[in-house]
Amino acid sequence: MTTFGELCATLGDIVVIPAGEPHASYGGPSSIVTHLYVPSGHAAVREISRPLRMRHSLATSPDEILDAIGSHASWPRDPVLPARRAALTKLVSYDDLDIRALAARQGRSTDGFIRRFKREVGMTPAAYRLALRLASARSLLKRGDTVADVAYAGSFSDQSHLGRLFRRAYGTTPAAYRSAFAD
Image (cartoon, rainbow, N blue to C red; front, side):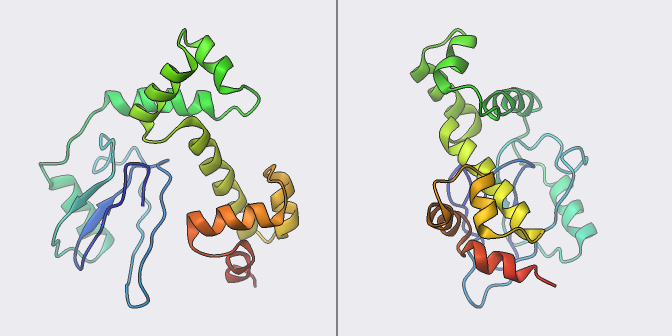
């Protein structure tokens, strides 16, 4: 699931999700998913601006996967959109400004700013900020911080608030996620 909607992959499919795109994988009990993290500047993915799926690839190794992605001619590529998108997401990532103030700074109405952000980024500014907070929570949990400390650091109302949102986004509880990375 990405901000652009759900992509259902089957055996042999390659799904490309641009760097910085909030997403979650929902595999069934018998699914095997391999994640390959590629720097956004890599030639194979540099201009890909939205999540895409390539059907029935025979690629299995990282090099084969990158070759398949880089040589796939039908990916829609837009070098301008990632720059506009990056500027908007950077602007919204500052929590000290409310959306009304950001919209005024851009010379837009609040609703107009939200519509533009959603069109460019694929989610509302509030959903984007929540995705950032959850990603930060995931990082803190991975390094071993307690769920209570993570909830406090992420400005969640309490642990159960973090738990509900974390479970919805990642399909597991914060405690289970944390324990998966425990020594």
